[in-house]
Amino acid sequence: MQTTLKPTIVFLTFLFITTLTSFNVLNAQEEKFVVVLDAGHGGNDPGNTGNGHKEKHIALEITLEVGRELEKNPDIKVIYTRKTDVFVALHERANIANRADADLFVSIHCNAHSSQASGTETFVLGEKNTGRNFDVAKKENEVIFLEDNYEENYAGFDPSSPESSIAIGIEQEVYVEQSVVLARKIEDNFINKAKRKSRGLKQASLLVIRNTYMPSVLVEVGFLTNNQEGKYLNSKAGQSKMASSIKKAILDFKVELDQNVGSHILQVDAESMVETEESPKIIEGVTFKVQIAASSRALEPKSYNFKGLSDISREKVGTIYKYYSGETSDYNKVRELQNEAKLAGYSGAFIIAIKGDKKIDVSEALKSTTD
Image (cartoon, rainbow, N blue to C red; front, side, top):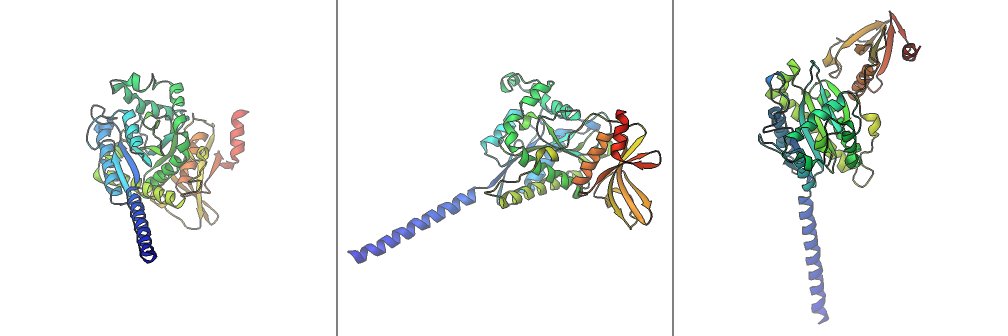
């Protein structure tokens, strides 16, 4: 009896371990990294129509291409809030992500402005609705008025009220740091891969990401109202480059996430990394520039030689050439340009001030406005 029992116990133990291993392998196969891609606007909501282009179509084309590329990775599952030209309520876009227990939510849009403004922007949720950030939030949030039950779904939310916008940031605060990491990767790729101008990372109160319980970003791929940028974004080549940049950022984010499992993941100082627009601070008689490099080589002051940065100038001092980005009397604007340079990889970029034909300390320039 004992001799028969031992093989039986061994067999049952082996069967149990095999079954358990198979179950774990099956679970591992099913535990994919879930990305929800949200093409902004759609259906009876065209978005902005700068230069005759339709935001809803361009956003959808870029979104679908991002999805097609991500779907080539067997470890990623892609869910779309829309794959055709249909209207999806803002709250439902968030619900789709939450029901899927998604790991990421990426909403793709095109920008608009009354001027020839240009460049990409990536937003994470926050209270910093100063200046144009609030204008962007207001524009994107006003879509709720196209919904039949918007008063019920948004509990009296008023897109024109800064107080309403501030209140919606709390629920997603825990994910802001990870959202900033993804946003930075997206803007890095727009600069370095797509060779586009970046306006940086921003915080704004955006309804489409207010109730998503995962890292979430809203990407503005450029301004349709800008003649050249609108044409670029309406082209297959432009859409492909923007999609490729977003796709690569998501894949890089996933790799970083995988490498940090079990630790305090992707910790960043969101306040220091997120750029916000402020009211102009003009210093009369002073010109500010951002010095990005110094070299004995005489490079052409062109954007392609300096990681996509614009408005490049060169100055020869002795045997050294100094290279600058931007030229403005607005101190807040030059700080944005400095952030843009750092985002492009020039970590040592610093601001210089020129008065007349002499370089002066920035502190001296700023002091002159308070005297």
